[in-house]
Amino acid sequence: MDDSDRNIIRELARRVADIASRPVMRERIALWKRHNSLRPARPMVLVFPEGSWRELLPPSALECRDEEARRIEASLRRRLFYDEILPDDTVVDATWLVPKIASVTGWGLEPRNHPSSDPTGAWGFDPVLNSRSDLEKITMPQVVYDEAEARSRLDSASSLFGDILDVRLAGTRTISFHLGALYAYRRGLEQMMIDMYTDPALIHETMALFEKGCAGLLQQYLDNNLLDLNNDNSYQNSGGNSWTDELPAPGFNPDRVRLRDLWAAAESQELAQVSPDMHREFVWQYERRLLEPFGLTGYGCCEDLTRKLDFVTALPNMRRISVSPWADVDKCAERLGGRFIFSWKPNPAMLCGSFDENAVRSYVQHAADAARANGCVLEMVLKDTHTCENRPERFTRWLRIASEIALSSAG
Image (cartoon, rainbow, N blue to C red; front, side, top):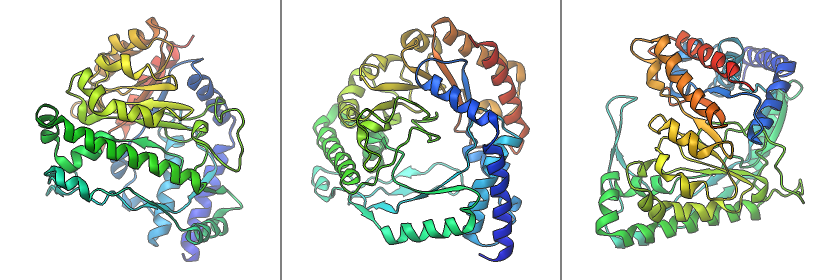
């Protein structure tokens, strides 16, 4: 990294550190802790541009020349973007985490797909699990920890801006299980649906292997002390914040993080269209056992959980439930009440086409009213925003509407 790139990054880091030191960030942390402990002051609002970042902060907006410098620059500029353009409830902090290099070897039988000719298009399944004999190709994933490489990256980051940002070595903090995806990516989604009727034993045998492999990964993380607390600014479930005073659990030893000290999550979008009984039989029973040892958990992503809340909410450590754009907001609000975080995902398609502020306001207000009427702990998480049609102001306009409604719903 040459001096020019270094100076650009250090100046951005100073701006991030200044924002992080403002009282509003401490206020947001306090709000999140109340929210995640089911004592909300008001609904919380988060915006994740995700696929739209290429429009909000395109490569042409970056000034650094070195590839690694540009990666760091982009990360810092995104934090600044939240302060300057998207002032939602995101906590901008002055922490720079250097991950421990803990790669995973894979499952032996790896997915294949037919790529799309469109850079943002959908790919097609190319099944690799075609018979029961293919199960013999599945191996248990192994964690590979390169401590020397991790320390080298830590030293580099510390040298770059350790005097400005809080540079720390961090273990694994995001723990989520996607058993439905593991099966569908290897078998094909349509064939997965057929298997539920014609060969349910194959699904159960495969899920048992995936559960065993995931449990084995967790044990390896524990044995090698590769876990790190995630009761802070960590992303949780399919959109949410992890700030809480409820973790770590009593008896915590800062030198060795346990599963009960952490948040974890699971989802099964592939089972969105199957009945609650089939969801519970083919995936949930395996996910439940993986989630049980953790301190707090979340469930769901884009799948509609309206008819599946009975078994999902029965898990004692369940805290955050994803209410997707396809869920019945009124029924979910009635069922969840104030016992869980109502993590509502508004439809991101409203950012496209003709942006209708009145339609957005009516749509968001309906969800807020349903949540308030049932005493829900509401968070509005705009995500899966793959495009804003190169109109960044639509994010700002959506956020203004949602924030006004959230403030009016306080109390």
